[in-house]
Amino acid sequence: MTELHLTLDNLDDILSGQLTEEKIARAKTLFLKRLAEQAHRFYRGKMQTVPKAGVFGFNWFNVWYTPGVSQISTTIRADNDASYELSNRGNYVAVVSDSTRVLGDGDCTPPGGLGVMEGKSFLMKYLGGIDATALCIDSRDAQGHHSADKIIDFVKMVQPSFGAINLEDISQPNCFKVLDTLRAECDIPVWHDDAQGTACVTLAGLINALKLVEKPIGEAKMVFLGAGASNTTIVRIIIEAGGNPANIVVFDSRGGLHRDRKDIQADTRFYRKWEICEQTNPRLIADFDEAMKGADVLIAASTPGPGVVKPESVRLMAPKSIVFACANPVPEIYPYAAKEAGAYIVATGRGDFPNQVNNSLGFPGILKGALLVRARGISDGMTIAAARSLATFAEQRGIDPENITARMDEPDVFPHEAADVALQAVAEGLARVSLTREEAFAQAAHDIRQARAMIEHLIATEFIAQPPQSMLQEALEWAIGQV
Image (cartoon, rainbow, N blue to C red; front, side, top):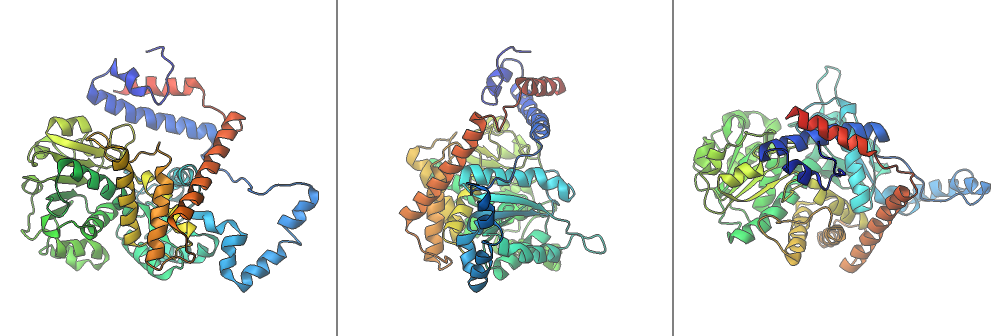
């Protein structure tokens, strides 16, 4: 075992001298899972509640609570929108999940989703300057079935406390009904990150990938593997952004989606899938490899791999093909295998490979933009505006086949994205308050800087302790031993 000081940034360098490329990929996955469990035990989760106001003497309790706070209650009673000024509501998001579709792990029980939902809250704070809280709920009805209506009722009941709702890890078909109903009936933005968020960052990556291979989006032949909440929304957003439905074939576990799929038509709960059946695949292609012949793009959001997508299938694609293998925590095909099979550009959902197409690039900026103008919703137009903002940001600083989209470690991307989303909300009449792009950018940048400075201060003063080096070393030794 190496004696080098291990960090998450030099992990590849340490492993490259000991393992083959395939084993490195497996070892990194095992290492990160092992370290995640140890680090979460060390900190007992990732989030805590910290006041934003101070105690400048004992009598300030009379201001923050009774009797002074009575004035706040009656003022908001007279004008509910005053809650955005007099409470934290305007910068506060609920991350709501019934934990029935957590990453690639399926139904994890309601508390099983807390790690992911706290993770979303963590990223919102650090990347978007947003306060958020995890709300993992039990959606089962009296018969023990997971009920979309219970989730809908819950969100409607809690919406007065929040400026926006982030839905997460809700299994299909409930996810479709929950999102569409709440978007129509709530007075605040309701955002399903598995669906709209994935669509946003995928479109952003696709825009720049197609620029590099000089293929217009309307002419590109695209294959989609997986027809859950992510890919059904990705298809819809790509079509709205200029993709040609006649050049699109989508596959679920039973084959290609097309107008003769009576099994999908008969189950009205899967109406989003049926819309795709009606719009795409006019040749009624049922075989995956048949669809892959000459395809320019593969977007997979299906079962974690590796091996779900075979190199033989990638070899059937057109020259300079684009492969997005976005299953988590392990992509459907590893990037090195896709490249060896002829793919020109490969993206995954993971940050330890080039071209991370991950929701973390989208939701902090999108939700921040919506919150800044107190939007009543997040439209598909706002989602596409965010995707184009991400793509433009990356293009302006330079793109190449290994670097097609913005990265999480580029802090300026989030205020730019927030400003573009806010501007789109104003243009569509969804904003309660109007801001210029400059005003939205300045406020977002300020809030993000403040959030990061606070976290850095807590680290510097050791209120947030560094994990011990032995924790990382043990996790790595264990992972190498497993492969």
